[in-house]
Image (cartoon, rainbow, N blue to C red):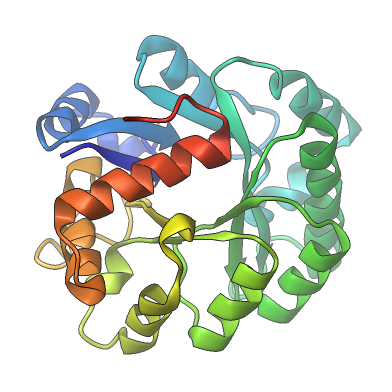
Length: 258
């Protein structure tokens, strides 16, 4: 099985005691590629995922300012993002978006920083990785203004929201929530997503799938999400692994697997 974890936070301090072993377990489980998310603790450090990607040939990176950290952004932040987008291992801008649940940064600042990063993605030709929480309407409104390819990361919306995102050309990436007993709306969204728009992710160390729920998540656990997605769609896990990997490659401009 050849899986791609399209969203993992391998820089997280929860992996400090055993990061190498976590990566080894992922490879042993068939996770052949991982996209490390580069938001880290926010500006001024924008290279947290690049440092990992430079160490491992199978790890790629994103760059971006998470909505939680939007108030840390200064004009030089966007200049540096533009420069880092040219790094050969940087595949996308993200995770970026809006989070009205915690409001760690003022909402207007979140919107301004989100919009500026959408512009950078358009200028550099990079897909975007979207984080949205309790901010769906504002997120979709901004994406309609700055249309571009990208990923709805850890998609947990209902069928109507799924169709809105799909109509804008987005891929939907499903994580451990897909396996949670009460997540039937998410499973319905996964059922109606076209084959060529599906992705899988862990969002590790968060949101571990059943039967690991409540534990620290890690890339090897993506197999459980792929199995659940296969059940929902009447496919084999191997088929889900292959098609989600090809989708990731096409979206991010990588060579397509046979």
